[in-house]
Amino acid sequence: MTSPTLTTPFTLPDETLDLLFREARTANSFSDAPVSADDVREIFELVKYGPTMMNIQPMRLLLVEQGAGRDRLLPLMSEGNRAKTASAPVVAVVAADVDFHTSLAAHFPHKPDAGDMFAGDAENRSQIARYNTALQTGYFIVGIRAAGLAAGPMGGFDAAGIDAEFFAGTSWRTQLVVNIGHPGENPWFDRLPRISVDDAVRTV
Amino acid sequence: MTSPTLTTPFTLPDETLDLLFREARTANSFSDAPVSADDVREIFELVKYGPTMMNIQPMRLLLVEQGAGRDRLLPLMSEGNRAKTASAPVVAVVAADVDFHTSLAAHFPHKPDAGDMFAGDAENRSQIARYNTALQTGYFIVGIRAAGLAAGPMGGFDAAGIDAEFFAGTSWRTQLVVNIGHPGENPWFDRLPRISVDDAVRTV
Image (cartoon, rainbow over all chains, first blue to last red; front, side):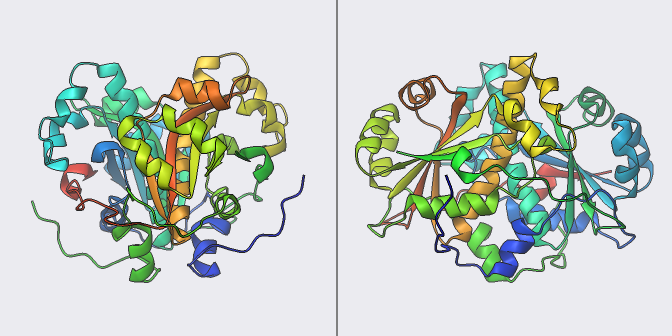
């Protein structure tokens, strides 16, 4: 079945949609053009407005600059990810705060005891933290692109090792590592095929 | 600790950033202005370009229009979500395809047997499907806003009941329900407080 030609519903211009989605690509190499931790903090200040369940906002970021911090991170990345992670001007370790409920009173002030409902079941709380962190990670990747930067999200790393190295004694749990920078030489592979809308979307 | 004043790194104009993040709000009521399933299919055609692990693209959407389909969905929503879900011109049930690996050869063509690595461990595959669907849901919510529409994501529903009613015999598993439309009367509560960047973002 072929999709009919549809009228675009978008209010943003094509160049914006291209920057955020259609032309945006996962970068595998980065140029020397600097990107600072402060730039990524500003991206966080934008994407923090994306919605989460009961406003729990569990996404946390550890920004790893070039230098001593990066040297601690690299051995914990999969071998195939090390060179690109070394070359990125800044790397974000995206973590879920599995104890988000302890600060929920400040974020859900009309129901100050809302955190109590998550206090008992740590496994359920971890699942909720991880789901909402993943939602926020989607916003974060779009925000990186809104800053004209390329993101390189990676799943290949030793999560328990990163937790032990950087998050010992805290409630932060590593979920994804994202290289951030300006694309370098031969920065990406050919665009991989996308699923057809007819396979992915049904209507009743 | 107060954040220093930072130079904006964004290449998009403030109005765009406002539309997507700063001014965008979760709508709790919807006007009669129509939104069609075809509009949401077009939004999918935009956000499908967002990255997923190994290009697995597990997010699936069931678009529930007004009428018989909506009547089947409403009893499966939490009571507090029924009125707004009834009023939205279109509702998207976001599902994770836990058998994404069976079509991975088409989406990762340089490694046609990539799906095999997910064939054995259904629990691991489900976790991967759910994580990547959540990432894609973040892109989808931004895409709804790029179309000038309001999204109303909801976690309060009977997921097993929706699976049984709409997805029996398939590998789609309900993860979120999102009302989509133009805001109605008194569409949102006051903006809830966001976490401070100093609590959520660290640098090494």
